[in-house]
Amino acid sequence: MPITVKTFGSAGEAASALSSDRAARYFGGGTLVMRALNEGDTSISTVVRANDHALRRIEAAGPRVTIGAGVTFARILAERDLAFLHAPARSIGGPAVRNMGTVGGNLFAPNPYGDFTVALLALDATLALQGGFGARDVPIDEFLQSRERQAGSLVISVSCQKPTSSEAFRYRKITRIRPKGASVITLAAHVPVSSGRVVGARLALGSMAPMPIRARAAERALEGRALDASTITAAASAITEGASPVDDALGSAWYRREIAGVHLRRLLSDQE
Amino acid sequence: MSKTALQFRHNGRDVAIFVDGGTNLLVALRESIGDMTPKFGCGQGGCGACSVLIDGELHLACLTLAETAAGRSVETLDGIKEGPHLHPLQRAFADNFAAQCGYCTPGMLMAAKALLDRNPQPSRAEVVEAISGNICRCTGYEPIINAVLAAASHRARA
Image 1 (cartoon, each protein chain N blue to C red):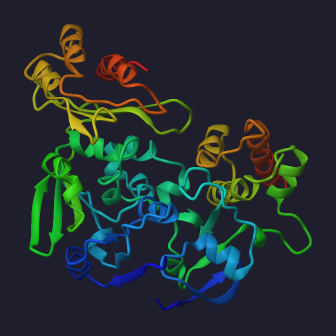
Image 2: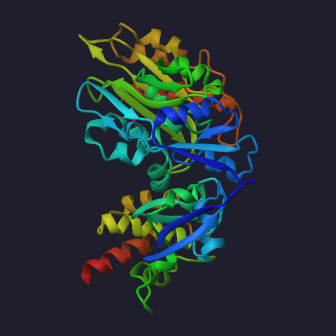
Image 3: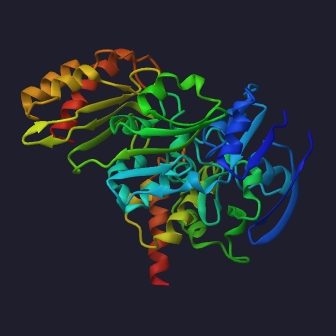
């Protein structure tokens, strides 16, 4: 069935078009929406695009970075000021997917995709949304909890604080095949150490629930403590609390629960 | 539902076609232009058989909305040979037995060309990364990696 393609000059106009039509979907890099159209998804009758510069902007010079929702992973990899996001960006797809897939689209990617969003969740990102109602900023965890109901609004950009050091933010994606495969589980850890103690611990997990989740029990095991073997063991044993992984072709729920703590331990103790 | 007029550059030649709304670039290339070198594999971005270069950047034609190619330069395997002569990558693929059934070969060649165009002397790891979005079910990849490295070292000697 032919699809109506609406292209707007501004993100605001695109957001209005999205919020007034339940069968409209925003078309970013194409890796999700074109794929759905190729599979014959009849719930989409209109795709909306915007050629708005704001969607492609990167502001990364200062301590807080803002990345337009339409920025591709290839552009993140080309940006030296975004080095802390290179590991998650590189873990996604092959070169063609990284040239197409966008930061904004990744927020909507179902399991086993959405690895970049796991990193943004651990970084406590804020999303700038534009809807028919106007613009608003939403914390990423709030956004993810109501992700299925967000189709009527358009993500303009994401922003987060830069980690204070390269050890303060760590990322690991577990795949069945190398060099690239879909996620069995994905972990991102924000563990800045101040005066020998972890302050502001945030752990995020991918493929451990229908959308990326925070591992809050494990965060509590880290907070205010030295990042030593006993702290890491306590965090690893709490990592699956609140998780609800599923069985799929990449791994069973049991397997995912078994390995999450192992990989958290390796991630936090700098082991391969 | 009306068709959309679309003009872009296809392998150095200007083309003008009409496409239905929501048509992907792979269908436009194969059915409207008749360029059968990009292949339909999965339609999901998982296999890389439809890889093409858009303004020199590697893209998956099956996930590209055809009308976003308007005014841009699309390069497919059909355009990389130089007159009657095979492209050095094609020659290297033949010499290194890098094609068996051949279905992944157009995508592999475009991914390899995208790599060599910006990095003429890649390491083995860089070659592996460059073709990591392209699936081959015949060769086990080693002959393909060797072919890309051979093409790079041939170019360095030339």
